[in-house]
Image: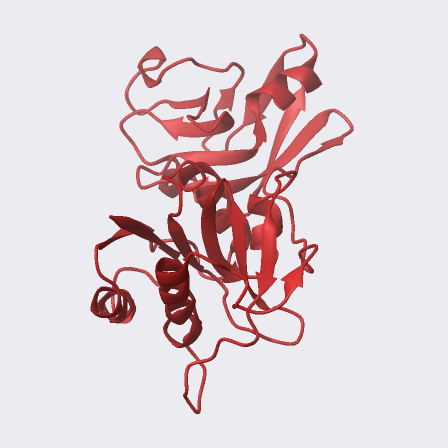
Length: 261
């Protein structure tokens, strides 16, 4: 069975998901459409790249991934198909693919020749991505999709972007999960390397400070904030049996400053 995944910023209301799945199931046999998420913060490609890089790269060979986040084609942002890890990724060259496939060996094709016969184009997945998925699923080839390219045109802000500012490590929020856990743009390895054996302090708005990395949520009492390491190896801010993001008002792309002591 051929797998087709969906990663979008549509939300879970409305007709978009049903419309796309109806086309795919009506036009392709022996497929299974998998929802990765439809809750990407609207238009935020860094968050989408973080999700795709951690959720999609290890699917079975020939899986087709449709990624619709901030997707509209223009003279500067073309629709592309990327082959990586023997899988296909359909998305917009809006900075997202450059972040997902950083330092990976990929094939890239622009898709300027694949258009549905419509007068207006406001829903790229329906008007174009579904047609591309149909071609890939039936022909297993990218050569007929358009022009082969050597690189992505749009880079975008890195999802692992952090910097040193005097005595501070400055990073940002790249993802917030359904529990309100906050994923930061710095990994444990980079953080410990920058500390170089020194202590740190992260001051919170609730008049509390975090001064150590906990190995588990069980290391603190209920309702206590903590800093730990997520399954992606990114630093993670959490609240045991609570919603850290909601309590402290954290949003995706917020800056976080951690002081080196």
